[in-house]
Length: 84
Length: 166
Image 1: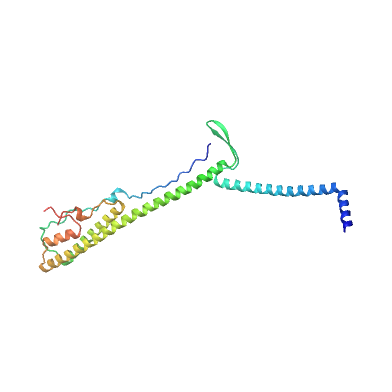
Image 2: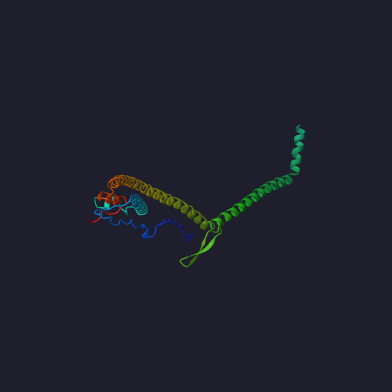
């Protein structure tokens, strides 16, 4: 005997994944050549250190963010960077 | 006393037909009241069932349905009962699956949080050591007024740059 159609629960997993280009690991360009011996004023050195530190901190944060969204995408720098 | 009882018995015998009629009428009236109450109850229940079934989205009344092209009478209440049973099952399924989905999401989040906590700690340690190294190299550069290999290496490390090829 026919009956009303049985309702099927709809559990939809919403994957709110950002665009792929936002999930790229931070760029790690090659650094300054070590033989570059030179002179820089104290203020310029301090500025360079500020900028470099911010670059590293931002990259680390982005890496954590990408790994949070897609675990294991960006390994820690120690795992990929050649030993210093 | 005895005379009085005899008088009453005589009176009953005389009007027996009347008394029988009165008793039968009383029983009839009582039955009628019972029936009227039962019918009112039934009507109320049917109306309530109608409202409940309408709320569930299926009619209470009997209906005709086509089974393999042949009309079949679906008795009163069957569709409604199936509908309600289906709704209950739906709710149970939904609650169960929702609980499972939520539990899975919470587990996933906990795993992510644990991994990230480790990554955050490692990053903080690496930053601290890189900063210390940079400060030492910078102090040395300040003292000698020259940027040597150590300074640049410390800088590349601090900025998260790859070590140069040469």
